Length: 122
Image (cartoon, rainbow, N blue to C red; front, side, top):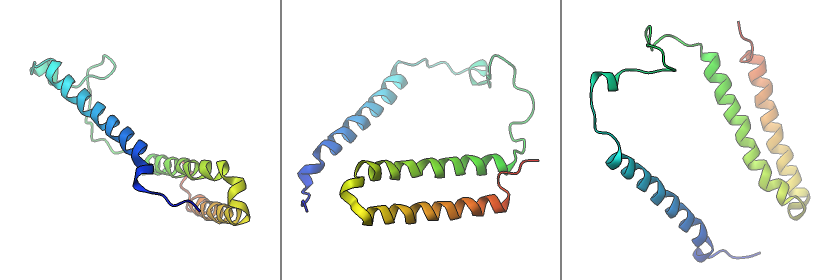
């Protein structure tokens, strides 16, 4: 088994540093070059060319947020499955059993949320 040394992570650290430098550069540049006007019209809410009507704090059903969170949860599982699929042959039977266990936990969670009625909308 290969021993990893800190030098093996140099490309990851360099890419992260470049990404952060780009973000900082973009934020600072837009702040310096952007318009400096502060007026009542500038601060007004603008949505699709229509005047804002009503209160923005209108209650929204929690079901919307539950479905969104569940989408993210089950979407993130793909992040764990991709490296497993790429290394399927090298992981052997142990890796296969571990993935079956992982999928079983996800399936149990899915059946739990279905039983709780998260996907039943009025």
